[in-house]
Image (cartoon, rainbow, N blue to C red; front, top):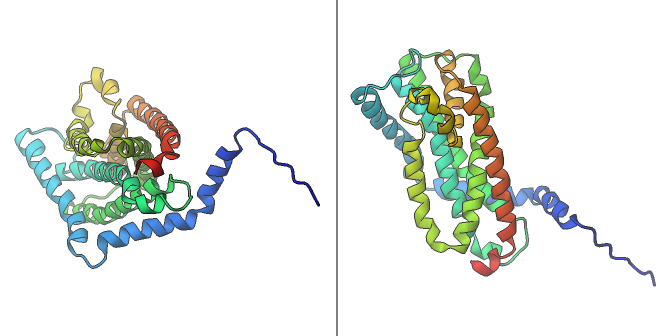
Length: 275
């Protein structure tokens, strides 16, 4: 009879976890497709709302900040384009944050029955936000045609800023997800945080209106760099990147991504008991 030796190696389980993320990639696709189909299957309002909501928000912000407050745009770009170029990444960030935060509790039956890396669940939930983002992008194309605005070569860098927006949302999203599982009343705080963030982020106005001595401090909000990057990519030469703040935003995104994964992994083993 052959004896088998069990070798316990420090950190082996951690490496297996990240390897399992790839092994369970089909589950990720199944969960992502399920969330998208539930949102849009046999419904019109889901698709229409993804178009109407950003359009109405853009109109309101354009009237308030552009017409009433008379804040400047960037270059000669129409103010509506300025607003919508900032609204696209913000809505992607906000909906990703909200979707990820409720994903674990929404899949309680699945998590309590089978093993898989729980990191798959909130990440798959963000796919719905990306689909909404792609639908809303159609309005941006329509606005460019309406205003006869031709983007520059910078539009080719837009996928980079989409990845930046994804990373900016997944880090805080994982952290809030773990808190939401342990403290159920935390779900009431999330809508307030999202609403508050809308007004402290440069969505309805250009971050260029912030005084120079405050811009680096203002960039402690990592979404500022994401929005500025989108505007630079979409508006081209009409927009300017504030490079110190942009670098700070990347540093904060990486930090919150590390922190979110760390906190999520610390609480992951107790999810099945808490939900």
